Image 1 (tube, rainbow, N blue to C red):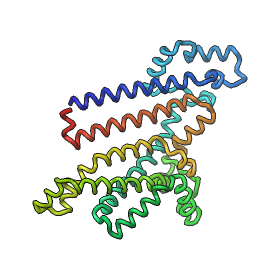
Image 2 (spheres, helix red, strand yellow):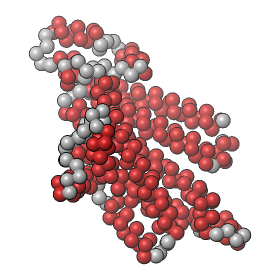
Image 3 (tube, rainbow, N blue to C red):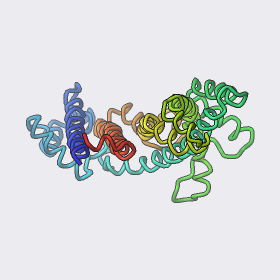
Image 4 (cartoon, rainbow, N blue to C red):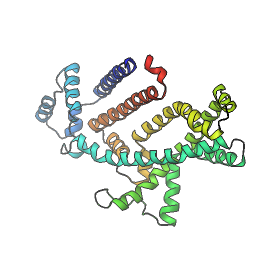
Amino acid sequence: MKYTVKKCITLFLSLFLASVLTFTAFQIIPGDSALNALGMDATEEQLKAYREHFGLNDNLPTRYINWLKDALKGNFGYSSQYQMQIKVSTLIIDRLTITLWLAGLSFLLIVVVSIPLGILSARKKDSILDSFITLVTQVFMSVPSFFLAMILTLIFGILLKWFTPGNYTPLDENFGNFLRFMIFPAIAVAIPKIAMMVKFLRSALLKEMQLDYVRTAKSKGMTNIRILFQHVLKNALIPVITFLAMVLADILAGTILVEQVFNLPGLGRLLVASIANRDYAVVQAIILYIVSVVIIINFLVDLIYQWIDPRLRSN
């Protein structure tokens, strides 16, 4: 209980600090927010009214408190690149749906493929199969996702015509076409992560297999399979969970280049477009989302550690 309370306090302090840094960073950026929003043709009266309406004349602590109150309600203001007609929250929610689907499919592929391959590679250590898996993972670890995205587009989109490159189908129009299109960017994101995960899991399993408790279990007549799944795998999962959390945070934070290759209207493309258009309200909200995702996932990992390793409960 004490461990959980400490982690909850750390979570809220981290989120608070992240919000302060995110807000402050965009307040010290050179330029006039009102001028960026209304354009160079805005009159002095319009600029003055804008600053008054959005509290830009208030001091920094007051502006932060007002911004935090709105942010907790999901209100991040309006996007300047759409003539103040679209809420930032609306933009992000629309794009976040795509990113979440991409992250979910990618993460599912990573877990389903990498864990069996990592276990198989560790069990068949120094065999031809292990050498082959190691070689393949070594190759794919060095290949960036955006390059794989281009290869997949060339092979499955242009040559085999399994999907039409750039022809994204929204989820609410046709779920089957949406899923068929999304699986290819998910594969592009997942393959390098699968390669890293297989190597990481193999190393963790082999390290555990050298410990004294494994030799003790063998001396009691337990089979290698039983030792692996009842003891070794559970202990090896602790560092693996950390890696999986990093992978999930990386995917949820946005796979910008893959989204560009497949023309996906996700959060990554929105971030690039907003930076190019100096739409600071959108950029600020997306950065806060990314930082919050990383902090919350690390918090959940700490709780999972406590569940896996009972020794932490006494801390």
